[in-house]
Amino acid sequence: MPKGAAAAKQDPRRRILDAALALVATGGYEALQVRAISERAGVSSRTIYANFSSLDSLLIVAIAEQSEALYTRFTGSPIRGRTAADRVDRMISDLTQTMTANRELTVALLRALLSGKRDVSRFVTGFGGVLRTMLASAIAPDGPSARDRDIAELLESIWFSALVGWASGTTADGDIGRIMRRACRLLLAE
View 1 (tube, rainbow, N blue to C red):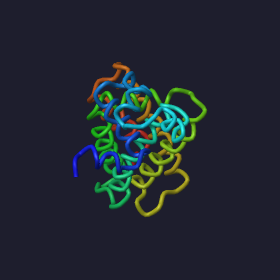
View 2 (tube, helix red, strand yellow; view 1 turned 180 degrees about the vertical axis):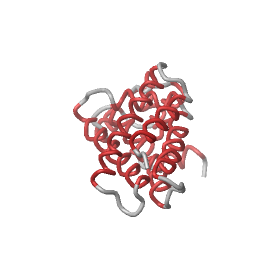
View 3 (spheres, rainbow, N blue to C red; view 1 turned 120 degrees about the vertical axis):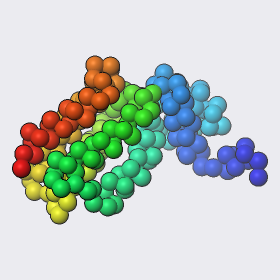
């Protein structure tokens, strides 16, 4: 079957998501335009807006669906490490490496998450919740206490802040890990 025929049979929503990711990965947030997505996905702008309330929510959904494998990887098997700080450091290092591997895509995601748009707020809440769950599981693999969940919330905020600093150019690539190791040392002193 020709490549175009296979793409035409693919679900229009999936084509929209794939087109948005491809455009942002190469052109950044500015490439996230209805006309470009429409052309690349082979759908009308009406189809885009029938599936997504905004371009920011489209981008977040596209990345969230792609990130499910990452979440499964972190929660599907125990994170190795002798101490809670070791386990959190390993998880955050892997997650940071994944997020910083494609600067254009991560900066676009952060811009969408920080857009302040009402239709995006539930994704921000969901993104933070997933990360806190992952962190709490790394802190206490046998079941986190209320204190462990509080620490996970603080670590999530610190990591997100460091990632925003990286995206804005005020935090160097290697500084995210250094910041997180210091936070772990202070919050998870054993």
